[in-house]
Length: 170
Image (cartoon, rainbow, N blue to C red):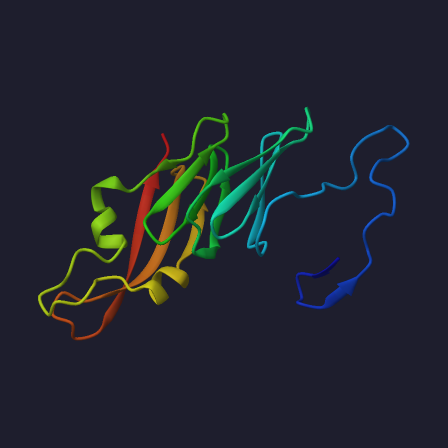
């Protein structure tokens, strides 16, 4: 296995050879999912390994692994917050709550705007798949809000503008 560090430098064989340490604690997590790994997140005592169509959840306490089907498009939208992990897919923006409850859609009120079903006056989608793929996310600790910034088509189709969707968690 190999990886790229934060400076995008390729590194080989920098993982421990033993899967456990001298206190019998896990050093390696062997993933069982299928497909390219798109991102990792930690929420409470769970490690989430994201792929395009599934998230593998590894419980660090029980070592129990489960795979949940999801919709992931933008790996740069994966956002770890105190209330859970958010991400953007083709059909919406989702949350895996920190309490372990099921994944939920957080944008049902404007899902048709996000997923491309809603059209502007020129008949084109407000948000294209390429724009959903380029979406970025962030966390505002003061207001306890998850922010999602995405480029959208203007109503008259004269160009694009950036829109910031905010999800307040309290």
